[in-house]
Length: 612
Image (cartoon, rainbow, N blue to C red; front, side, top):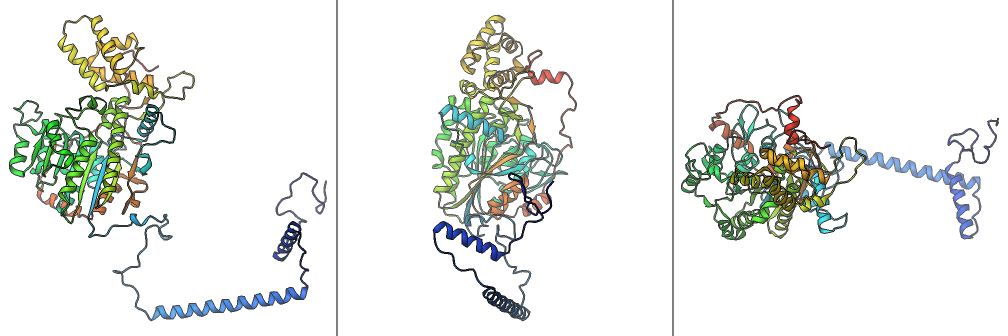
């Protein structure tokens, strides 16, 4: 055993504070450094300073420190006297704190991200990717890399403008619906599932679009779904529940208590604007909303591809303009591209709206507010159709890029903010069956082979069965295999149980087609509804956008919209509550609890057909 003063043997570690290790003062350390430097460079070492020299040096250092301390004390006294004889700043003239300075605990932002001047003309484009969660971006990014043979670091335009994430719960559920999600954006208020521009208790709340119109901005809505669906409805109408679509249509054209708040509407949903005695109508009454809009509120109206083309991508538009290009929803992009002569795309409608609103505001002191929704990403998630979803996200990414280019080329200041109301489908970019060996992969080539959505294939199947009511079962199965599964889904190894299920259960065909693609691509889904996962926020950057950096509540996105435009939404809310009488039957929007056996039939699409 070693004595306390003995040296450790070679290879043993000496604790930093071990006994017996002599301490070194700063002069010893400096002297050792001088010795090492002299040895390295081959220069003579200066003589060791004598004790007297060290004493003189220490006295000089002490004197300097004493004088410096005295100077600091004198300076403090002078400053204190000056402050006591100077009028302090008043509460109405506070010392400003620059966003991002050490007093706020956040990084310094670029100059362009500071709050805009109130008198500056500006445009705000808000994009909503309905139902798109983070996994949808991973799915689409990988699909695009595979299809175009791109390197792994080649990303979507959205990826390059990632800004933060948003929490999505509603006021009455951990899992929001699109109505409560859009009300959080339009009103900056949490509300119940189903609410269209309403707060809990069926209290109408003013929207950023309505306040923008009141302040002199031009306004627009562009969607690929029915224009009376939840997201667009929440910006320009106020009803108790989202299924009151006939009333929503009336308010969107200007029949609400505020009058007309929208200048441009492009999308689907024509059936809600036609009286029920007209072919293609889905209204419950005989009100001709288009006619009221034209005669009473001055709307122009186009309802087909020729009418859209006449707008010349926004160069030939007179506002207000209502463009309804589908009876209900514009087809999924995977299908629409084969019907381009019938339906315009999201990017085409967005570019048209941007140009039309820019032209309408060129001589105005105000710019415009435009909401653009990639609506059918959500529908693909509900159906669990990955082939349809990747094409929807790609078209949304293309539209996002078009908006960025518009902002870059415009002489007017502009900001783009984009986010989702929620995620749909519980998408997972991998799937492994129980008791399988690890399968850590998925196959984008399966999605590439599909050239039609499950929705469209189901329509073709049902039309075929109606047109051929006495067709033999085997003939029907052969037609399904050859014309639908092999030709349109690109699946050459379909099982007999799959083909038989499609022929026997045409009402469940949409889920079966989707599952056939998902299983082969190794893509998983946890639900046919929404999930509570946080969703991404994207932005061009610009004045005030630092407010929605990081992880924020969805109502904070709504708060940014009103602050950037500098509009008084609360004034609109007060007016609505003074003038509106809300006629609504209270009802709870709840799902079923538990998991009875029959649920598995609904989820899988047929008895006996499982994912195992």
